[in-house]
Image 1: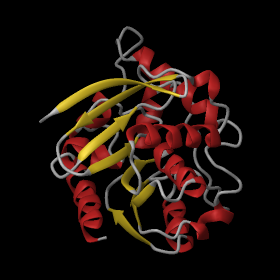
Image 2 (image 1 turned 60 degrees about the vertical axis):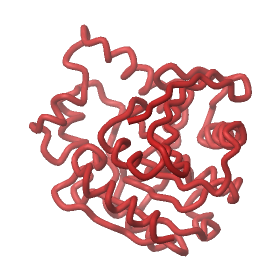
Image 3 (image 1 turned 180 degrees about the vertical axis):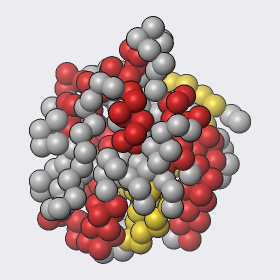
Image 4 (image 1 turned 180 degrees about the horizontal axis):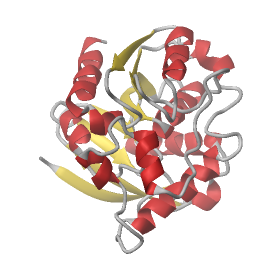
Length: 260
């Protein structure tokens, strides 16, 4: 599959960008886990699209975290990035932190983002269904939190094996960058719920029924309060939808984007 790696200067921030596939453009906004290198889910999307996969500031080799103080700063970064790429009304597939970011970008620049897929999105506070604590140090506890089956090969392979694993540095960078926008308020924007009625473009919400980090009630809230949204729930699936249900989630995303 055609793959290209670039480094962009986005308003003074060094930004890692991977481009894969051929076809019309699609922007993928990644989660706090930092899936900034192509995974099987990206490759499925790239069978139909040219997938633009940037790393948020502070993730992977992207810099500029010192210029990011909250989710709005991250959203403006993507306004600048889309301007640099000369993309408007671009389809977006987004996951967790990335889905929250996509919503915030669409609020401030509705013309930039077209049809939107939101997978296990952060961004909301839902009474009675709080998000669990992500900022914990135990990989075993994180596997329990994030995966439906924490003993699966995907769950075992996802995290660094120990502190000697070369991935540990990128994991620590990802956690620091996530904390910059999601520490307090914890992984949500208190004002976002009140703005959802303004996001009137087509949205496909995708959730794992057994998501313990961000409960399904958050997906139901998004689907109910976004004017043109529908919800798909995947069985025997936790928060790690692109990993646990790669084929199903990719098919849902591609079918939706092909229908709007």
